[in-house]
Length: 99
Image 1 (tube, rainbow, N blue to C red):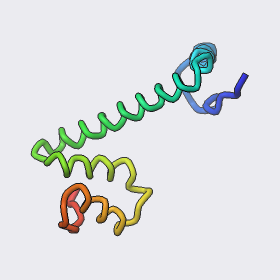
Image 2: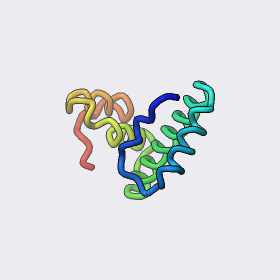
Image 3: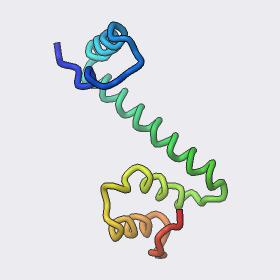
């Protein structure tokens, strides 16, 4: 059986239920597990988008796309790279967003 990389993380789920969850997931095919992962990533991005939209209801769709990327990947890119990403989605205005 594969080891569970999350077995030592704090949790309010009892150990016997965490083991059961892990066993259920590990019985799935690699393709099923990949789909689960992609579904969770899609759900997480939707949650981030909703939070941004709720905070800034007037935001344009292109700015919303950029702000979502910024919220998720801010630690992955320099300010210069983030400005280029923003220009791709929002246009040639390279002024950093005031969010």
